[in-house]
Length: 159
Image 1 (cartoon, helix red, strand yellow):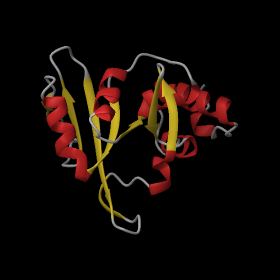
Image 2 (cartoon, rainbow, N blue to C red; image 1 turned 30 degrees about the horizontal axis):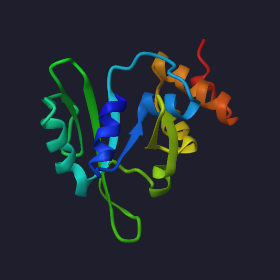
Image 3 (cartoon, helix red, strand yellow; image 1 turned 90 degrees about the vertical axis):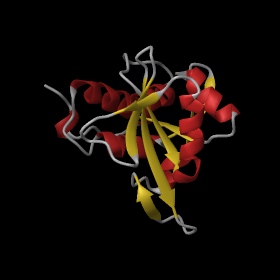
Image 4 (cartoon, rainbow, N blue to C red; image 1 turned 60 degrees about the vertical axis):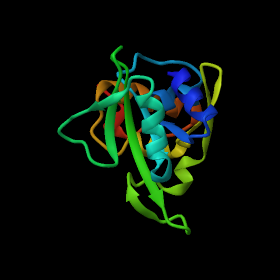
């Protein structure tokens, strides 16, 4: 997925890696296989992102829980990108889409040798521990806790 993030970035399209690939980037190694690549993008750059990915064969894939600001694009090879669109006002207040706090978009990490923007570790840990975990989330939370010294809540310690 680095060719996607790197390609978008080289075209001047700012994206932030989220989800499992963000965990991998923050801890410095790939922990598991991923079904998709979660990318956050500003509303102002959404159409550029769609155009760039569309030119590379990515098309909209319908799903029941999609919205105008959270949708999936898929290519012929089965690669999926879960797009999270956001918009802030001039004061950094949320006005549209996924409710990322401004400071959550301050992370930087390396993903397979590529410097990427990503969700800041403390925020990704908060996001990952805010819902009922799947087994993959337990792995992600443990890796973030080990790397950054966070205390894993009882709900995410596994059995």
